Length: 465
Image 1 (cartoon, rainbow, N blue to C red):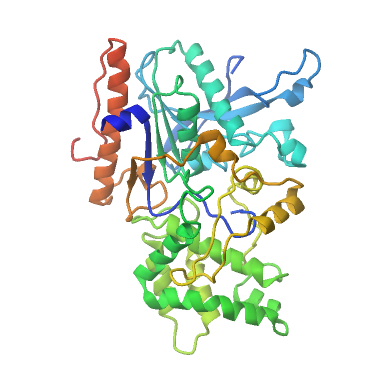
Image 2 (cartoon, rainbow, N blue to C red; image 1 turned 90 degrees about the vertical axis):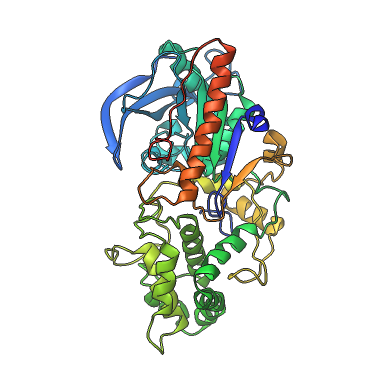
């Protein structure tokens, strides 16, 4: 246990890494914070919405009068829980690091991040996403500096300079939590990083690991389901190359627009399988899409139970329809839809978040593919006019020497950060109890060093409560 306290970064890996990346560039504080009158909640969570005047660039010093005031700062949205659970000055502060999407969406499912949701520099998304110059400030380094500045200011204004901060984050937010703890150890006493793929860079792990694990999920559920998906890629390409093939594929999969290439459909299907493996929760959820409990089981049941004579692609549609249209309310599918505002991730993947992804030949249900940096970089130059820096993240944050990771092969995407339910499996209850014990240890160490007293509390719904 002591090595964990020295590191003060708790990594929890479920089945899969953080987000989904297709093989092309992936789609997949100063002044007082001012609160706008907004008390709201999502998914049963009650919170107050506030905005903070955040600096656009933390790492430069323009001369007085040289900078455009409107462009040098932006309003960063953050949420403050209304549960009344804070102990007040000197009580611990739990800070969730935002993700690559709208903060209110993440607040209901596991967040605050520049260029996502309402935290938009330059006054609008159109201006912020205009070109590589306006997007240049969308980096992990700037994001965790945002958190550091905000926390410092909040503690000052709350007369809580002595309060220890524990960082939390899932997926990309978990990466930020871990990296912030490493970069700003004087601001946070520890970090819990759940489903955070900080090892997915360079050659730290095999480039095939993500899609191998996705494939294992489907194979474990149904060998025939796994094989049908594996066989479908060739059939899809053949039909797409045939006469009126793209039109036929568009009709089979109920697409809103006629396909321009069969690759667009392949990417859409690949994303669905990857997301399904990530959110294969044992209870119903609405994190990415409204889904039943154990959604891969439902996908494979739909795919396998089609009547005799059903074509492979019709079976594939029946299965993937569970992910994209479980409610049955979608009339047609828009392949370019981005309901959670995660489009900025494409830019991040083309600059510093270069995570090599490959398909293995035998273990994977995908067609063999080996990550090719040259073509990856070419796509990024074409899309944004920038060349990726594949070694920057490990240069900035390290990663090759990471150890002490909790790994649960029955897990799903940051499931430990989701609300506890009576249906939670025993391994998940035990995991949360272990996390609570470790975090309590960080706080005991902090308060012990200051001569203060801290009483750990059992996790709600655990066997200790």
